[in-house]
Amino acid sequence: MTTPAVDIQGVTHRYGTHLALQDVTLQVAPGALYGLLGPNGSGKTTLFRILSTLMPPSEGRAQVFGLDTAQKPDAVRQRIGAVFQDEALDDALTVRENLRFQAALYGLRGTGRRERIDALLQRLDVADRADDAAGDLSGGLRRRVDLARGLLHRPDLLLLDEPTSGLDPAARRTFWTAVQRLREAEGTTLLLATHLMDEADRCDRVGILSDGALVADGAPDTLKDALGDETIWVETDAPARLCNRIEAQFGVSTRVVGSTVQVAPPDPPAFLSSLYEALGDRIRSATVRTPTLEDVFMVHAEVSPEDRRERVLAQTEETEG
Image (cartoon, rainbow, N blue to C red; front, side, top):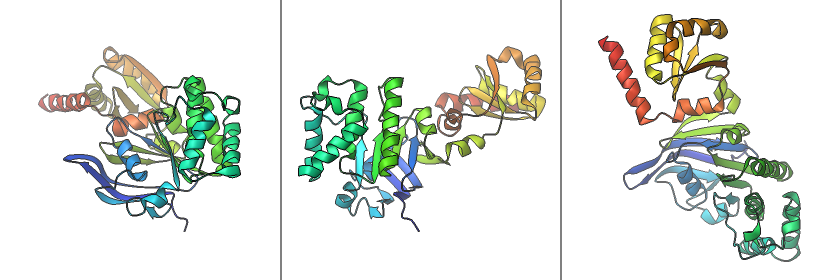
């Protein structure tokens, strides 16, 4: 049996009385690209801190290629690299000097160090800027240099924490092209924390964290398929109220997704006109489409306190009526 790249079993973590992670269990296969989605405060950063050996979990176990992050932190650090939201670069040093400094931290010297730096600079298309100060580079180029920094010691697992934050669409595409090229060349396992749906959609598997709990885990297409095939998606000012009205009047399955209502009749295109005739004054817009990963995210993780209050109020009104 192949040892998982990441094996998290029943991990719970507390900051005083605050519960940041709740009994999280997940595995990442070697060579996979696994994405973690979640709103701010969902536990993504805490999980990354545990995996990068910055702190042990309050309960449970986290392993990287069979190595316990709390019991063997030095060995784990040799197997991981990290690219954070803010680049770990010294603006006063050149690109090559930044990489030499990072290589020295891992004991890389001589010909091997020089060849590794040159190879990464070539693969990431920044070789022509090797002697420029890091502070003179654009945001996209800095990200690629920081990616090279995280990969210098050939880590088996690379942690990517919002790695394209602040980049324009063209720079993001270039960054991900470089990541995919390196993944194919070196077989690195990637664990990505992101809030961008297009980045999560490119992952082999996605885990959704909400209030510290893993509420969904699977391939993006599998998670989308679980919401059904082609359905009607209705934008409205009062989704819970509309949801209740549709179910009472038509007897079809509905679901509140953020500020949207998903309606699943047997024949969505034919049902759409009947829906507008009966409840058109409550509908801002309605479309017939297949679910997206953003819909999956909203179902599992994006229920605001306002949404919860509005649903309770709607249910109370229905009961009293």
